[in-house]
Image (cartoon, rainbow, N blue to C red; front, top):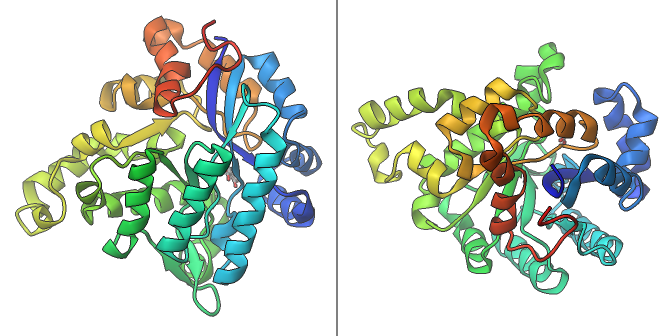
Amino acid sequence: MLGKIALEEAFALPRFEEKTRWWASLFSTDPETHVKEITDITQIRLDYAERYGVGYQILSYTAPGVQDIWDPVEAQALAVEINDYIAEKIKDHPDRLGAFATLSMHSPHEAATELRRCITTHNFKGALINDTQRAGPDGDSMIFYDNPTWDPFWATCTELNVPVYLHPRNPTGTIYDKLWADRKWLVGPPLSFAHGVSLHVLGMVTNGVFDRHPALQIILGHLGEHIPFDMWRINHWFEDRKKQLGLRETCKRTIREYFRDNLWITTSGHFSSPTLRFCVEEVGVERILFSVDYPFETFGDACVWFDGVEGEIGVEAMRRIGRENARRLFRLEAFRDCDA
Ligand code: GRE
């Protein structure tokens, strides 16, 4: 399929090459290639896009990124630097590349102000946040965004009418020491990433964020971070038990209704036809978006797989997931092969 849109596509600042190499050494069998791919913006990446039929990509700063920086002043300065850097890099390719804002999540007002600047001056398409913000004097605290102090930030997202991609980051501090240190091979895609994001987004559901901001749109990668598989069970316990025990006060609708009205899932890093078919049935074709997860995954793996799903889900579902849903969600203007 030509003109696919991809949404979970990472870049890193060249000045952090050493840090990028260290991170790559934990996840990549070829760290040198990874470093080249993640720091490149318009050459290698656009060559892959051309070869594999990706018409438009929304780029975002790699994890853990600014969410790893517990000093609020430093975090804010880095977020602004990243946003201005990527705006400059992509400005000559508006029909191929867009960006999500990178935000310091220490303060709801500061995050909202930077988001507004990115949308109004750089024409960014929303924000991507790497799960909780590290905070506290030694970085061992975590800021979640599911309590009412974050309402001004979520209100700004809905006022600007842009979605937020809730992306994973690695477990750190005491949480890492207690849960993951002795199980380090489960950090990342095998388990910890999905745990982190699903805790966070289900926290938003049960703490009423979507009831207070009914128009808010949140995107989850990796075919929904395990939640679709548990939909029936979560729904059963929310509706048949926990709402009678008090959950009803902060969570008005059902989990399936939040998926229908507020949540999206992408195919990033999860290229399985049986799982996609299951998500089409459980979540619905209208809330699923194609993505790659480059350079942690390859364009080849994502696109060759996706280009073959027509026989599994039909051509109409493929066009919606591959392009049309994202085109509408982000109100995109013409891009490469957008009508192919
Ligand atoms: C990511 O998307 O940020 C990521 C990592 C490490 C491994 C896989 C992955 O940071 O998708």
